[in-house]
View 1 (cartoon, helix red, strand yellow):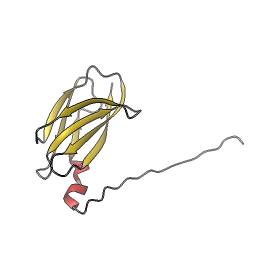
View 2: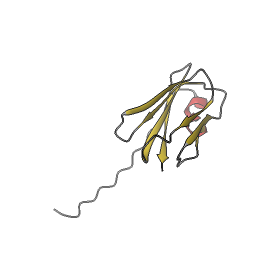
View 3: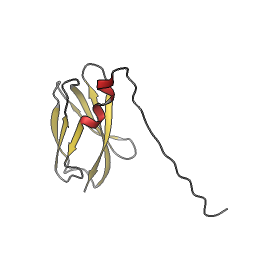
View 4: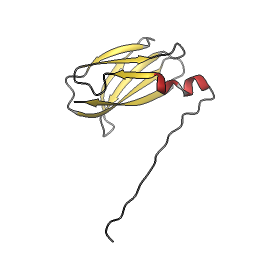
Length: 106
């Protein structure tokens, strides 16, 4: 059998019971993206404080962990990372909720 084609759509939904928290992923800004050196990570809400930030490669391996102290923004020096696609996960201080966004390094 040749020419087999599959098209998948994967969708994820975060359900916490708190509409404010469910919408936080759109408030997570990673700039610039794509990046080459410094990246600014900002969560534009007062409802959620950052506790930890993780960067994973496309294999899911943890590349970097940065502990945070309840702040809503931080910066990362990513010049040492190889070009490719990475995933930044932030974990909340109080609730432990986490959000992941893609980061491209050129």
